[in-house]
Amino acid sequence: MNIHVVISTYNGAAWVEKCISSVLLSSVPVKISIIDNVSADHTVELIRQRFPDVYLIENRVNMGFAGANNILLRRALAEGADYVFLLNQDAWVEPDTIEGLVRVHQQHPEYGIISPIHLNGAGTAFDHNFAHYISHKNCHNLNSDIFTGRLKDVYDVDFVNGAFWLISGACLTKVGLFDPLFQLYFEDMDYVSRAKAWKFKVGIAPPYVGYHDRENRSTQNARQRSDFMRPLKYIFLIKNIRKSFSGAYLDYAKWHSKIIRRYLFRLEMKSFVNELGQAVKVLRSLKKIQLSRNECKAPGAFIYPTANVYASSAAMEELSVPQPTQ
Image (tube, rainbow, N blue to C red; front, side):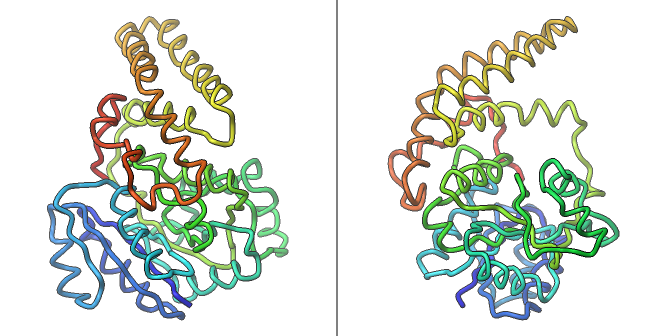
């Protein structure tokens, strides 16, 4: 079994030793590949000193989560990977996690992406975002089955973030790589949507767990985070290949108009004017988004870079998308 573990790092010295060490303890052989996005701390030195046999690429520029991982995903496919396990730098797994997820997939090959239960870094509770992903609305019966002791191998889920993804080789070959439009944030939501468009299921395998240590990290306040991510949400909504272009654009228009009306009602004129400006920029960028839609409707999107990989930093700047800092 050819299993590649893919990790992108950025100022991850606080976590990478625990992250990599957990993978090395896996009960199934794996190949670990790491790509660093110009860390300013001693992440690279730590990896080289503690894990000299791990394959490591040092980027000269920060390519963001999507761009960096695409390099390693492309390499895994070239080496005939049966599975790729995408792992965050601030996360770690149990020895049986990867093998268990592979076993679940072999029994349920209709799933393109399978993830374990996400616990917090202390292992004392669900990761705060993961708790939302497995709510009854988004993942039917998992919580009640946990309580009644009737767990199934795998549960369908609307979405689960890419901190721990076992991606089948078949899924990668058909769906392709991350869309470079989403260098940071929404790249995993876009990928899940595309996987489902290609008829792959996305699931949670509750017998297995991973630990995501992000609860104590300093974060932007909710308003700043919302403003930061909103342009990406616009792209995501219009890009949705599970709908026609007109249907996807209507979803965006409804959502954006709600935001604009809210600012107008509150007399937040600066934000109101900014949102009108965003609408103009979206109109100017529709061709780029349509190129993305077309790319993602064909098998193996972004695996073989072409002129249609339009999503350079210039495209992101045109949509006022913040440059990736991870």
